[in-house]
Amino acid sequence: MNGVTTALLTGFTAFTATNLDDILILMLFFSQVNTLFRKRHIVAGQYLGFTALVLASVPSFFGGLLLPRACIGLLGLIPIAIGISRLVNGNEDDQSNEPDTLERQAQSTWLNSFISPQAYSVAAVTFANGGDNIGIYMPLFSSCSWQSLVVILGVFFSLVGVWCFAAYKLTQVPTIADTLTRYGNHLVPFVLIGLGGLILVDSRTLENPGLAVLTLVISGLYLLKLIRTVSQTLQVQAQKLEVVPTPEKL
Image 1 (cartoon, rainbow, N blue to C red):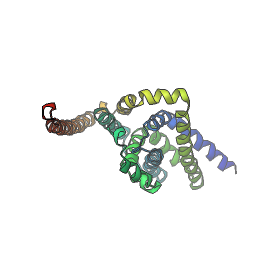
Image 2: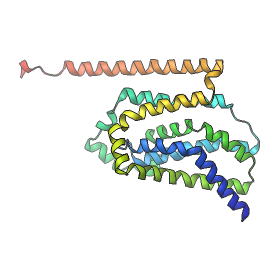
Image 3: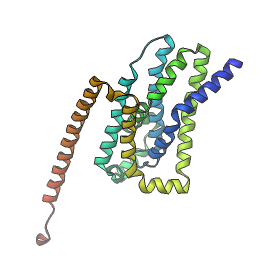
Image 4: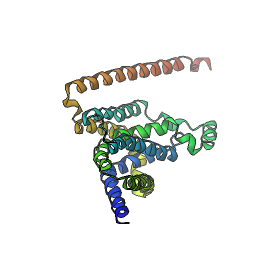
């Protein structure tokens, strides 16, 4: 019984220490909920991302070695890419409120949420922000017995739900809700970009010449793709304007 209590306290302490910053990110996600981006997508994505972090750390239980921290820091490019994409696309998702969209979303299930792009987007941010999690979980798991590992993982996955619930409830506080509703759409892209930058810097990824070059290459390819997408979008909008009837014809 003493061993179980120790494992419970260890799991609670380790999770809290490595996931305090997730509260703010989850609050921002919950403030973006609309007909296409639902609360269940956030919860499912958070569980998917955290599960990936655990799976990346569990091999240390068997004495295996994972990638160096600097390589893990490359994951910081994921929230940067998502943030830039949101910044460029603006609030297009908020305009998708047609009746057929509402009907399709009403028929969605929790199972579908786990395989939706929206959940993967949340999972990617959660996993990319998990460099500290992996750094702490690896030595923690390597020193665990089977019994304590099971208890700690049970605590971890229980607290993921608690974290999601707490973040959602905080967005229901009038002052917080009003602020997030008013500024959330404009704030989220910059928070994601800043988060990615902090991950790159904190992991010392850019201090490695090879990884720095790889980061520049990946960033350059993504920016080229983004520029091409924006260009195509502008062309489509220009074509729509050309077919609008002029007042003289009316």
